[in-house]
Figure 1 (cartoon, one colour):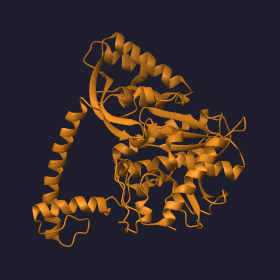
Figure 2: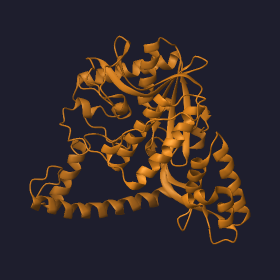
Figure 3: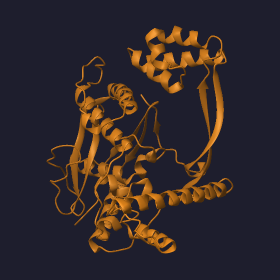
Figure 4: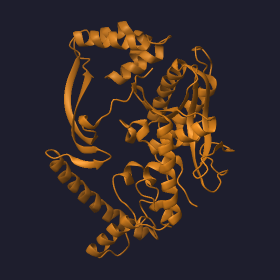
Length: 414
């Protein structure tokens, strides 16, 4: 049976068609964002092997990311992420940590096992009836708790509780069964340029049983086969692998074909240079139309938030940000005095930002907590000098109404 891996379970629970609909999958593609996420995973794995809790001066060997073709900007971001990851791993109270574990969970028997794997996301050892996935990091804390952590770099999981992730529910269940425990913690660790934010939930015996039932229901749907596409925001949010070939997409493209009397089909199969030129030309018109339609959606959402599923709404969210004004008297002197000449050069390139200052502070910190103290003191002085401007702006995004939010534990970044 063709079944989704853990990373695609959030999509599969909403639409099983990619696996049950017998549609040929297009060739797998990648992106700069995906390559950066892969690079962060490799660095996190290398550090998990090399960094020992309580030994901040431990040397580590670099992770090989040369095949990912990172841009100069992403390479700099990765260096910064490596420092953040090192800080986090040094702070974790672990007796043992195991990175990048390929794991299988048999949906009917409830048994779990480690897969024989040759590298990242190698699931060739999978057997019929098993759900598979990779534990980014399996922690055993000094007080004996098992913790499954998933590193994330994309924005699509921001604000999501770990227990709301089908991927983490399956991985938590598999790890709990593998180690024979009735309770396990699951963590989402968001690795951003300005720090690592960790949210943790606990799966007790009841939650583990519910996750097992959920997988049995999904596997029964997959075995039944067929079905119809269930398009929704999850197609984009969870990167549907057959989005370009899905009948729902093809039906929309067919409508464009008929309405425009196209000479060539609007498809991902390009048959000639003339076909490619024609599709590119028409695609530009489609993009303009999509932009106009999106404008109409935004105008509507300014007064009426739009349901986005899972208890969320899509609409206008007001945000606040601070920018550094180096033209203010004393601002540059404050930066030089606090960061030193090396840190000043690292943080300032004719302009600076809170993110750049954070990176410079982290780069020169020698012990835990020192970077945060330096950063906060520097920003306080810049505010006193009138060099920090606060502005308010709005953007359209999904959000959870306050009344619907829960009080689960939110862990601060280390």
